[in-house]
Length: 429
Image 1 (tube, helix red, strand yellow):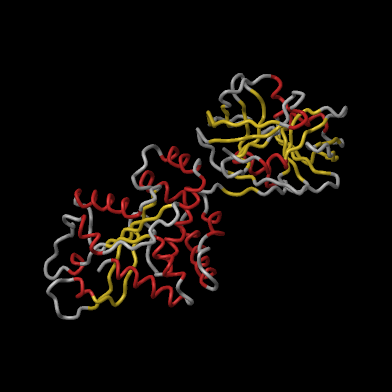
Image 2 (cartoon, one colour):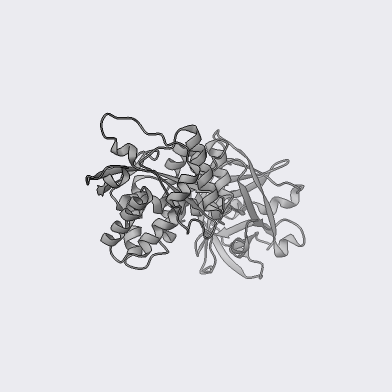
């Protein structure tokens, strides 16, 4: 269920010249509101009033309007709101959950307002005033709901994703923020990007386990990652492999599944941001998300080769694979994943498998060499002529929590790099 408390506080009735409610508007900035143009088109150039549930009235004017999207921007004549909502230019997806708050034309609705909720039924791809059709299961829509025109529609993250326009026969129609973004920004209204467009939305909580100066250093590396890739780029390549066990469905279906589970989605992308920041810190490569790798310098590889007593030191290229799961048991999900790959003959040496979950306490206890021996039948490795050092390097199993601990225990970037390198070296022994 979507929390609409803030939306309620931001939402006001639009009154006509006789003080009768004719629609809804909401504060997007402290002095700017958004509503449907058809609600206020008779008041353009004139002062009129809005009213909240506490019966506070404020004078407003139409600042600008847009026929293309049936939207209008209202500006207050002195009133400054303590409550505003965030607008998000997210890509509309079918079956996305939404909630709205407005003032239907009923005795109670005009006093206290009312909530609507449902899912996106259709995204209109041809040129049209509105681009979304919204379902409202269990609610019989009638003329009383006309008062919802201009209401903000919020997503699971309590961001405005569209504005209600009018009632159809069995559904509601709305204009997405994505469609109206240019008009809104032109009028000084802030619009955040879709959460998949940029890692910046996950930046504030990245490295929140670390103390200064490591937190700031980690965030600096995260900003470099954000310049090079995005959640959308990763999702487009991995699709169902974003999770383990692998998700079924199209890319849009998978994205919607994630967006409808805010905690899981937020942790998934924060984890990817931190994981790639570790790779960036170690000067690794992640241009191909299916072939992320780091170099472990000056590694005593002779320790990995049974029967070799001569000391051999060289750099190792270690391929990293990151897996996110809904499961709570680190050992269970890691063992199942590795066993499946072993049976399929696709478990390779000089690879490190890194697991994470949004569940608390996941991966705090390390996966030992003995744990690996108990489940692996055969490890595939290419056969080369001569001494096959790469083929004798064991595979590794780590949790993202172990890597985070290596950062948290550091006081300098040099120490952090050293700790991460040691963790990866120990994992493949």
